[in-house]
Length: 121
Image 1: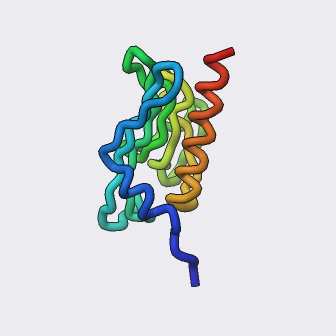
Image 2: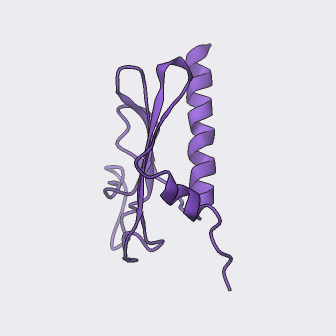
């Protein structure tokens, strides 16, 4: 039997919030429960993004679209991953292994801290 996801309630409560960060950065949180599907077996649609003072997204975790495989990658019949992260403003996305809402929050906020810290150096 699987354990309940203790971060799910927190993630859903953060939906619609904008969180101000140091250095003019800000976070936009979107999360809602949806029926489980092939693209969202965890039954959560989410977009967690970090923006700079100019409003440019500099980091994001979401499942809004499938991540396209690299051009020289044999993809034959495999499912395109929907959970992914954007590591920079121009990154088209790399797969993210969604484990739980709790882990998603931990991973996202850890990356937020890293990005802001690196920008302050």
